[in-house]
Image 1 (cartoon, rainbow, N blue to C red):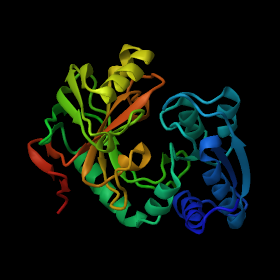
Image 2: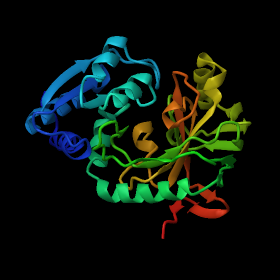
Image 3: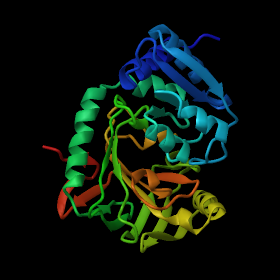
Length: 324
């Protein structure tokens, strides 16, 4: 079955504009059965550009951050451009990190849906990049973050000496990586410093769309670790996912600010964490952000309408970015 017109256009934007794929360049398209149609759209787009494309379909992984088979990890290192449209995220894996160290430009598209690809890849990525870089510069100049919401979040942590990362959607340099669609500035909280309460009220990776479920997840944090997770079915599911990996999975791994004005909360974390007007807190692996917690899980929780203070000054006010 041929890809939809909108999907074909978005696949071309992803490769030509976001990944800067050139004619005669080699690209690895890595996917699984869940994302087969998107993988085929990317393959068609690569051929339209004139690139040499290799299409590989692997079994779906069980969780975000799980390593792919060793043969595929080795294959990724041999291409200057890699696109991973898979049901579970390869972003926070050694395979992705090793491919980037070998010089690959890697675009990850975990859990990508056709509607997300069509809507969000039509956004103005140069405007998103400019907005994202401004947030990153502010975070890099900061020392301490406090996040509060009307729903009950009140979390503080140090970012002293930690570098924020811009995921702009423009993956143009050797060794660069990012999600597609994209639009976030993110960093790890300094290990051991996060304390307070996180109330996830948008969506939760591995769990689903909390808005549709009518649930929230309350997470108590002390010493950079989630100490208790309370709520209803969604909370029990999150706790089970983390417990299955082990104690380090409860680490507060990431703080991110969404900057994509085309993204919407739909229950798909790839899009949800990019929504402008939200922040996300993740648990588990933080190695990709310069941390030391290397576990095979990384789960993001979306928080709506946050107020974010950076060294006592407002970065966000009830979901509104204050960049002027």
